[in-house]
Image 1: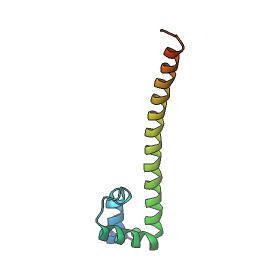
Image 2: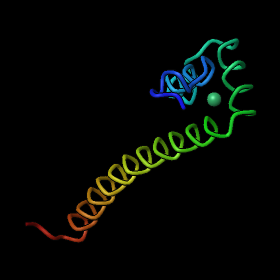
Image 3: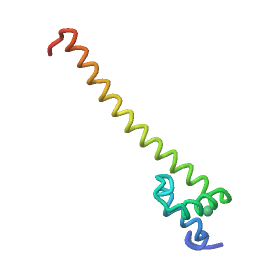
Image 4: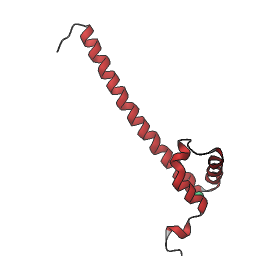
Length: 88
Ligand SMILES: [Zn+2]
């Protein structure tokens, strides 16, 4: 039984751990993207890790978008109040 994570993890898995954000952001070179994609396709733990990070990234973007929407909505509501003659 290996004592550290270092011993259990392959170089390909390490690449996924280190570069998954760049991979999801499409910041890697085409060669590096292909290499990561090929490894993720055959390595269930890396696929799980990639899906988790992707989900996290999506949630972050969604929460940012929601804040933008509520700000926009607030401005529109205020605008309509002004148009209808309301003055605070
Ligand atoms: Zn892996």
